[in-house]
Length: 197
Image 1 (cartoon, one colour):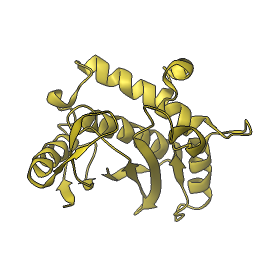
Image 2: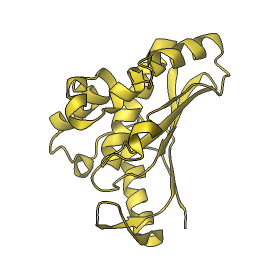
Image 3: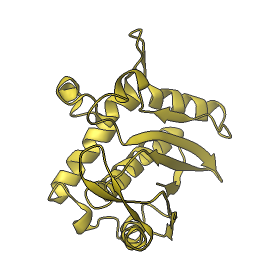
Image 4: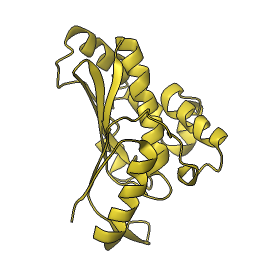
């Protein structure tokens, strides 16, 4: 079964997604040797910056400070120096995507350039997956693709996840990814639209 959630705010969307996962998910094996409750999902957040924006139960980092540090990691790359140790960060893959030939692509910069030139474009997307590395690594990125569109003069973000721990990661990912959405919207001089996770 597929989980469909529509909500106004991030906390409401996350809570609804947990209920739907419990009701519709199936138990599967994982490559980590554990069981998981699994269901494909489409979580639509109508106003990702509406209040309340923070859900204290969703902050696996343990505190609001930890959540904000995670935002700094995703949006500003404060942990990119740890890539050699951990294999990747989302910021590194989005802002410094390294091809096998050594060429580095700042996908976020390219998205901003693309949407400034053609706000109607459906090509403004960034990927994290590196098949030459990630198919065999023990902990590949869960985030696969970010697709940015301008609709009604608002920046919409549609995120595709390979896997997403509903309790430990989903809320913090949604929060940080919408901060990146706002960062790009600010660069474009427009407001934030809906978010799909």
